[in-house]
Image (cartoon, rainbow, N blue to C red; front, side, top):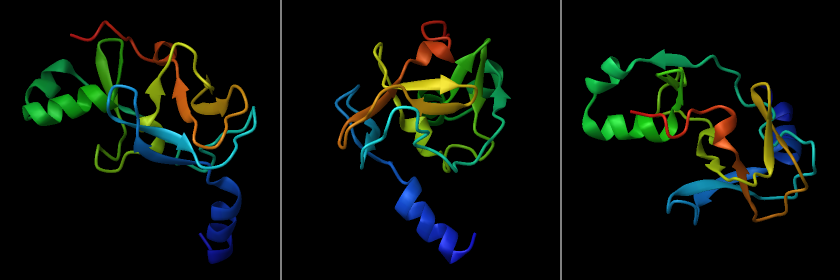
Length: 137
């Protein structure tokens, strides 16, 4: 990436930040500027193919790491799906919280604003679209 590309990224492509959230007492993703409906606020984030982790593999982890896997990895079809970069390099999208009335929509593997999102508003998604919520062991 050139310096000019980096400057363009800061001017045109930065929409969000992570900060404390009232949802579940954790952190979430918040708009730092208005995000118009239809915009992908994470444009330019690395595209990855998640790696499956079996329940047996996770059982061998330290309990604190098991909790992190359950908190940040997608649980689908009896497997946890992790970023190939591990948990120390999570993309900002991993911090999006669940809502039954989300302001983001998932199209393929990308998120888009389902409505205009105002500065300071938390970005949310419906986890049921991609995660087997309530099925986890």
